[in-house]
Image 1 (cartoon, one colour):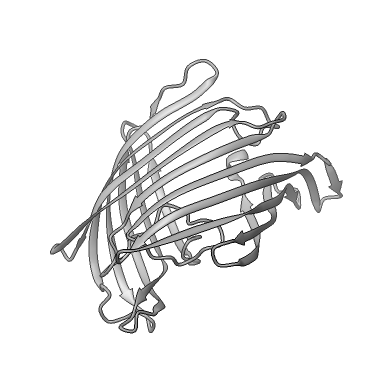
Image 2 (tube, rainbow, N blue to C red):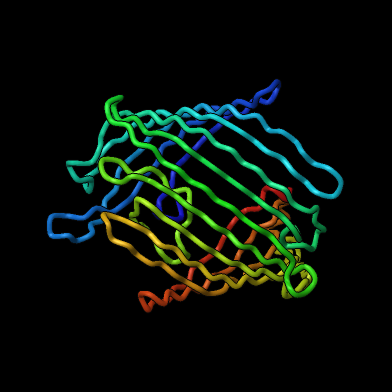
Length: 289
C-alpha cells in the first residue's frame, strides 16, 4: 500500500468458464493510519487485517476498429478480521466486519505501437460504492471515483495524462483502504474526503539496446514529469497537498528473465511543507510477457 507504506500477502483464484467471472481471494497483512489524541496531536498506529472476498463481475467487450474498449460492472462481498497490535489505540475497532461493494470500470483507448509509452488517446472511468458493517451494528458508506484522460505529447511517442479523483471515506472506529493515491511524497494521511488532480508527461529518452552478456539487457530509458494536487478534509479541517518532480526509469531484463523490469528513481519536491524526497522505483511488468 503506497499510501500507508505497508504490505500484505494475497492469493486469488479466478474462474471464467461461464458468465459472469468469479474471483475468490484471501489476504493477510498490516495496516497503518493516524489518529488525533486528546492533545490534538496526530499519532501513528497500526493493526493487522485478514481478508476474504468474493467478486462477481461481467466484462463486456466493446472494441471496434482501432480502439480497445470495455465496460465491467461488478459486485463484491468481503469479510475482514481486524486484530490489534501494541500500537493500536483502545477505541479502534477490533473483530469481524463485512463490506458490500459495487463497481463499474470503463476504458477506451487507441491501440498503441511497441514504442508508445501509453496509448495516444484514452479514457478511463472507475467508480466504487460500498458500505462497511461493523459487527452488523454500525454501517458506513464510502465512495471512490477516478477519471483518467490520455492525449499525445509534443513529440512522437510522448504521452500526457490527466487524472481526476474523488473519495469519501468516513474515519473513526475503522479506516477503509484509500483507493486514491495521495500526491507523491505524502504517506499516512487521514481524510474523510479527498479531491485530487494529477498531471503526468512521459517520454522516451534513449533506446540503447545494450546487452551485457546474460546479465543485463537495457532496452529503453524514459522520463516522466509530474504535478500532483489534492484537497483533503478531516474533522472540519481542510488540508492542501501538492508535489512536483520527475522520474527517470529504465526498461531492462535481468539474467535473461523474459518479463521486463522498470527500475529507476523519483525526485519529489513538496512546496507546502518545503521538503524534497528521493525514492526508488521498482516494478515487474508482467503485462508485457
